[in-house]
Image 1: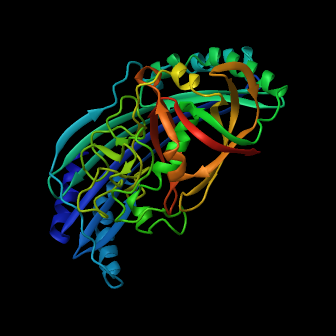
Image 2 (image 1 turned 90 degrees about the vertical axis):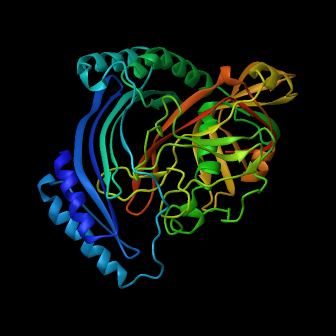
Amino acid sequence: MKDNLLEAIAQIKKLADYGDIRMKDIATEFIKMENGQISNLSRGRSRGVGIRVYVDGAMGFAATSDMDKLTETVQLAYDTALASATLLRDKAVLSPKEAAQAEYSTPISIDPFSVALQDKIDVLMACHSAGANEAHMDFRREDVIFADTDGSYIVQKFYQSGGGVVAWQSERCSFDNYLRAGYEAVVDLKLAERAKMVAEEARVLSEAEDCPAGLFDMILMPTQLQLQIHESVGHPTELDRVLGSEAAFAGASFLSPTDSGLKYGSEHVTIVADASTNLGLGTFAYDDEGVPAQNVTLIDRGTFRNFQSSRDNSPNSHGMGLSDGWQNLPIVRMTNINLQSGNFTLDELISDIEYGFLLENNKSWSIDDKRINFQFACEIAREIKDGKLSGKLYKNPTYTGRTTEFWGSCDGVANESHREIIGVPNCGKGQPMQVIRCSHASSPARFRKVRFING
C-alpha cells in the first residue's frame, strides 16, 4: 500500500504545485435492542482514497474506492483543478506546515471487534431486564494514511466504542456516551446499572409536574452542558462558518474575523479546543491535512481569543481540517471543545442557590443560524431549595437565552473531580453532508437568572 501511495504522490509532483492523499479504511458495528428483541444488527466497511491537488491556486479533488485506480484518480483531480481555474475568483493559499513521518493509535485494552457478538447481546438483554425499553452499542475503527508532496507519511488508527439505554413510561429518560477507547469503555459504562436508574427516573417523571416558568438560577450537568458548549461555542467559532462558506446549509456565526478580544462570557468561562484530550472522539495525532494536534484556547476567562481553523482559511492552521471519510474533503471540524474546570465543589455551587434547578440530559434543542438565540429542553430538572437538592423532580424543563449573555451569567464551575467527557458521534456539517465525531469535557457549571419557559 505504501509503495502505491508514494507512486501516486510522485505523479502529483509532476503535475501540481501541491497535493495530498487520504486513505481511510473504516469498519463499523451497531447493535440495538428494543423491548427485548434485537431490532438492528449492522456491520459495515468503507475503504478508499481521496486525492487533493493544487495548481496555481486552483484546487481539484477526486476519490475512488478502487485502489487499482490511483493513477486515474490523480489525473481526474488534476483535470478538476484545471477546470476550476477557469472560474477562479481568488487563489487558494494553504498555510505552511512541516512534513511529518509518524504513527499513532488510540490506546485500547480490548479490541471491540474481537468481542463475541453474543457477549454484547447478553449485555443489551440485561439492560432490558433492568427496565430499559431500548439499549444499543456502537463501534468504529478507522485506519488512516496521509501522504503529501511535502514529504509527509502519517499512519493512524482510531477506535470508538460506546452505547446507551432509554426507558420511558409517559416520559423518556436516557443515558449514552461514546469514547475513543476499546470495549473496556462499554464495560465501564455499566449499561445494565444505568438501565435501572433511567427506568426509575422515567417512572418518577411520569408522575412529576412540569417545570415552572420564570427567571431561575440553574446548574447544568455535563450531560446537558456538552450540548450547550457544542452549539453556542463550538459551531460559532469555526472559521469557515465565520467566512460564510457554510451559510447555505449549516449556518453562519455572529462572530466576525476581527472579533478577537470580544467579551464572550464571564471570568469563569475558559474553553479550549484540545485534540489531545484523553478518551475524546476528537483526539488524534495529526488532522486530515497533516497538521499536528493542538490545544487551542478559544475563550480565555470570558474573552474570545481564537477561531477553529484549517489550512485553507487561516495563515496558521489550528489542526482542525477533518473529513468523515475518504470520499470527502477536509473542512473545519471540532476536536474536543472543553470547558475548563473551576475551584468549586458541586455542593458549593448548589449551596449558593436560594431557589433554582439542576438540569440533566438534553431532550431537544433549537438555535438560530448565527448561533445567537437558543432554546434547550432537558429530561430532568432537580429542584434546589435553600441551597440544597430537595429531592423533587420536574419534567420538561426548557430554558432560553442569547449566547454571550448566557455565558456571561456563569458565576462558577465545579472542580476537576466532577469532570466528565461526553462524546458526540453525529455532528453534521458540510455539503455534501459529513458526520464527524467530537467530544466535550466539562464539570457542572452555575448560571444566574436564566429564563425558563413552558415547553
